[in-house]
Amino acid sequence: MPTRSPRIPTGPGAPATIADVAREAGVSKTTASDALRGHGRVSDATRQAVLDTARRLAYAPNRSARSLRTSVTDTIALHIPEFLTSAEYYMSFVFGVAEQAARAGLNVTLVSSGRLPQADGLILCDPMPDNPVVEQLMDAGLPVVTAERYGGGREPAGVVWSDHESALTELLDHLRARGARRPAFIASDTSADWALTLQRSYARWCAEHDVQPLLRKAPFGSAPDVLRGVVGELLAEAPDTDAIVCAADGAAAAVLPEIRSAGRVVGEDLLLASCVDSMAMRTAEPPITAIDLRPRHMGRECLRLLCETLAGEAPPGTARTLPIEMIVRAST
Image (tube, one colour):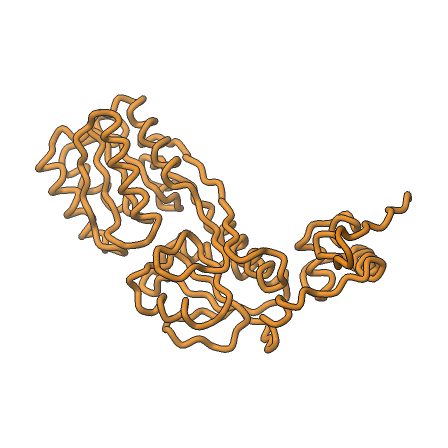
């Protein structure tokens, strides 16, 4: 096997970084970090190669990163909207965090109040700026990574977010191509960034296509009967509605009975879609077109970014985009 020439750090006295170690060892920064800390699923051969490379380059952990971990607990705190813990998106997100934490040799503790347990860092899923618990957690002094952007006054250490504007625009364009001219949007009445982005995107799309908006709002986490009431009123007030897009997880499947009771046929004289894919969308009759937000992958990416932040490998303010995609089904 050919040997690598040691990288000479640039600048007078410049120390080797974790990126240098990873490059010379031929692995990712995450694998190099796991190997050096003794965490994760790293083979013995790879771990030894990373250790040898770090020794050869005289690598030393970043001092500022080490200062973040003066009281290492190997525990990550996680907060999600507490009244939605049974929603499929959030459960999948939690599993994704837990999977990646297990690979890194870390524990995960769910937090339901502003009082934090001992932890090295914090992940906030869909943080709402008007939620006092979220505000307390953001001010707790721990490195924070958010799943979706936070609209409050304090910047997190990192964020993993998805381009909901582009995804909804693609969905509305699809409905228009299928003949829809009066698409309605059932929004979630919440201050979460994704919800506000969807509302703005719908309004912009309607303006660009000279369409009168049909926007209705339902409280975040609404029960099925509440959602059915909103759709029933919509169809009574605007009988020319020919498509409905629901923002919330599970909402599109929940309103199917109301649509049928109004004498409409989904997939024929009324198109139906969801901004969140789930088992309910896949098993509905007919199956419902939806945007796959990849929540499990989102959870894994948030934990990975937090670990890199704690290790000094990701600079403060790092933002990463998680790709999402539309899944077309019989409802449209």
